[in-house]
Image (cartoon, rainbow, N blue to C red; front, top):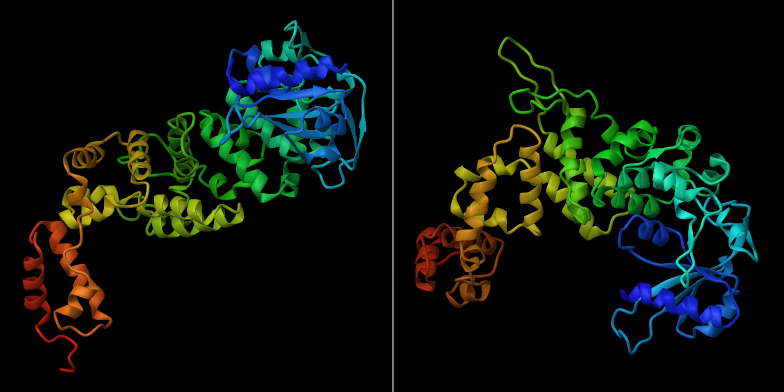
Length: 454
């Protein structure tokens, strides 16, 4: 038994010894029934938040006013990364003025009352930890068997309580390869324009899960089908119908190409690579130029530069961290450079592969080629170079520094940067190897009395 499951079991046992009801609930029960390893565990109980905190001193009252307490594993078990379990008191929610949190909660005495407030039937199952009996008050087991995502009760009411549930319906349907039940789907159609009421951070996190759980293509097809795509990412929706040169893209338009690449993303892929794949051709729709003349072809002049700016704007809109936004933009900005790697000078190639998280750039290129013309020669060229070239040749120790130039008699100034770059260029190209070689290069190329007033 893994540590989170063990902690959840111990919480249930303690609550029951103290005379309370306690069940595993939600996604963990769904995943157990599907034979999947749950990511986390939740417990539902009739004990009040105050009572839970009294019984479990190592706890956090992060959502106490909504009946939720986080119980932490004992420090002696794991001091650095203790497991944690969310313990929620049975309740009914009243009003959702902000479209996310209930205006007030009324504690309930039974699990049957509690599950009515949850989002989807497959997420409203309870598991008795003593008997392994499943409690199902909303038809969740039948929907699991049938492969259906169904909102509990009235779909419009469930989505009205939290608009993010519309996006979660898409993610669950994609992840499990399920269908969205008709009334639930209809409610998403109707309420899709209201998705903007959800904070940018929550939308970003949900979209990132959609991209990284191993079902990104199906997820974006469903975003399109549910009319959420033009609301969330109109730049991606505009890819549909944008034709590409068939000699390079026999697979079809920009939308189809992007979907095929998304299909290649494995579960657990880094979020920045996933977003880079999604956005790498985002600049094509606004730069599309039809063929002109008898030998003309479709062109997307400057689509990389335009796409990089668009990616930066999307990352800003969804409040990415500066680090992640920079990496996503870099993936877009550099994705076409692989076509030039066989002709690159050694110094240029080495600087290229020194890009931060270069493995993501290389994987995006592989997916790009595999999803279009299928030619992987440049991917294999770079892979061989990485395998055969010692890192000390890619990132060699500097032969000269600014202090060395001063010691040689040069006056500090704006040309120092150009001198040092010239030394590094020669070093990376293999034309110089020693400090003496570097000094001779500087003397020969920049003179012996640079910046001495001459």
